[in-house]
Image 1 (cartoon, rainbow, N blue to C red):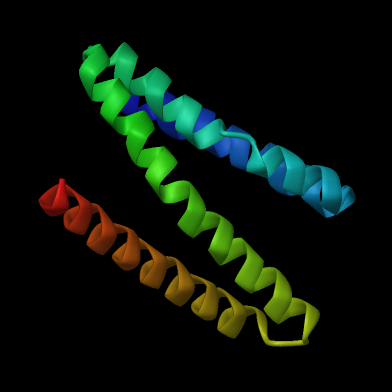
Image 2 (cartoon, rainbow, N blue to C red):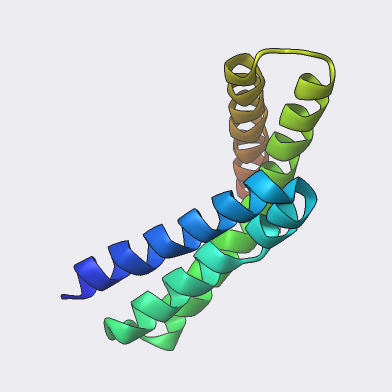
Length: 115
């Protein structure tokens, strides 16, 4: 039952955001930038009985992913402003995201060993 509810709620949220973005791109972007997925995920994890430690680790993971996601969006924005095709812009953004995630992982391992 939870799976069906999660799918329906998620589909409604995505549908709302895309319709808003179609009519009002700036406002759609602002709403899309809200932590809807993160908060929904925390909510569903909690409903399914996950403990606070798991929810806390999930929230930290979201924080670790934020800089790379911001870089992805910056790359896509700049590429589209320079008339790069959408698919190439997204590919470049994903490449930048992946590279920054790898750099973050390397730095995290380095500092764990150093301290």
